Length: 293
Length: 215
Image 1 (cartoon, rainbow over the protein chains, first blue to last red):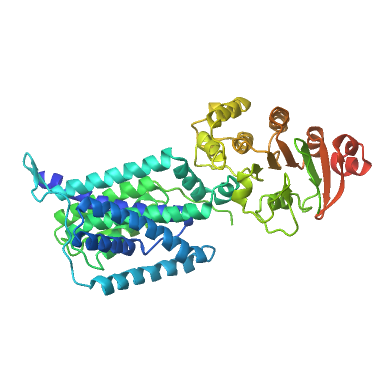
Image 2 (cartoon, rainbow over the protein chains, first blue to last red):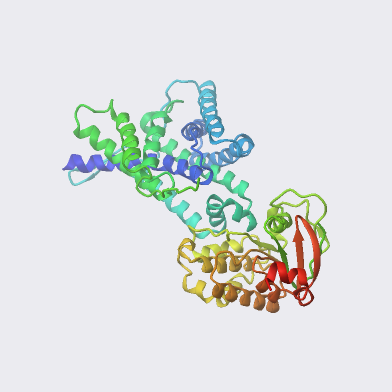
């Protein structure tokens, strides 16, 4: 039982990372119908920027905040410079552009910081926390807390501020939004910025576990896809719940199904994507889109 | 096409399908590319973007209502306020609009997608009013609605116009209702204004009577 509880907790911890990245994917998908394949690599890049700041002697939380700000600006700039010119092109064109972005982020990171793995600090204490017979990693608990705080902030932003409302409106009905005086194109850019922030949180939280290297986010991105698919790709809440569920399932399957172990864990994510798409393509919280043809 | 609207009046545009009525409204809000000049209170607006035109106080209720179906009624109304420059009286205006449309007050927290067609049309007008507009563009507000509901909406439009002095430009298929509401009428044929005048005069015009009123 203790092992079970422990595995669920560490599942929640990794799940928080998937949830953040899945949320980033869903935010962009909802607003533009585009899956941003470069989301993970953008997150990795932001984490490297953070690493450089830490190396230069900045305190952890200072670097954390600064990284999120840089990620936000970076996301906005990428949308304005790279995505906006192809905005009205077929989806496939935009997807290819995001794939190009993926390769660019990856190569530039490798070129600037090399492909060698770099240790990345955790802001949380090393000592595990004991509750009775169950042992929790402090980083795990901290990670869950950071994810939840970020989610609460995002929820409050979308729910209670006029700008958040305008962003939701723009994602839902661009034509009507323009007639209400909302600058839809800028709302999309802000969406990219916010998505980049959530990606960066995922990167910063996973780097201490995986150690930092340019391919760090590859696997995470696949889990995030699984999470977003499970949640339905059109529901931010679904992405979050999906993220935590994927984290837990991945951990439990890795623990209790002996032949899977750690090597085949990623297969679990792919299997989940396929099962969801076969059984319930709209996911747990997604809306089925009916289109007149 | 050339025409002028009277400030504070209700003007309706009649014309067959394809005459260019909707396009005319869309041209004013810069939703289509235009040539020539459009002025609003003396200021040229033809080079401005939709968002800027809205911010000047031109509210456009599009055909099909443009409801944000996944947002609540209240959120829809708050979006109507977004481009408004003077937000001081926003709360008071929200209450006023909800007084005009009591059904919306009842459904304040509901998702707009759950409203009936008539309620959604009321919401569209209410949303436009939240801008505190100087000019209200209405595209076929009666489309697909029961006659009773349409009459109710037109009654409210008249009340709003008299109370706040907002100018109204109404595109409407239901000519007899539109003629009753409007002070001025334009008749559009394939992109041209072929006839214009006060509604009292045009109601007696034989061509209008035969083609649009059917008697």
